[in-house]
Length: 64
Image 1 (cartoon, rainbow, N blue to C red):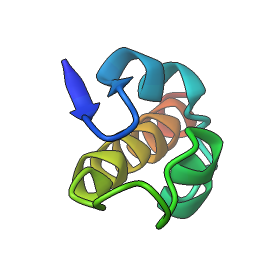
Image 2: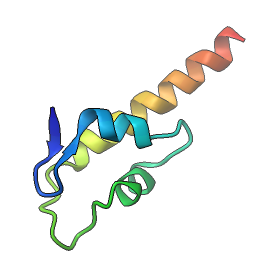
Image 3: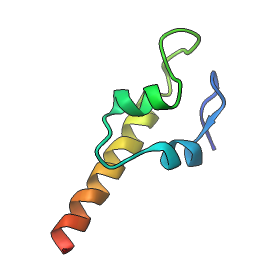
Image 4: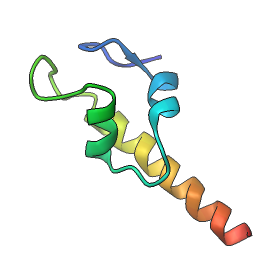
């Protein structure tokens, strides 16, 4: 599924680029999402992906 139509970024591409310690802004920058040429509507989805990655890291630490 596309999460950024302006840049043609898919959910799977965003998940692949995301690291557990990444902030929303870092992930957006890594994906090439910036204020120029992007409407910004995708930032909510980018934030969700970054939060899920951080949550998965916390769960993994708790289980260790």
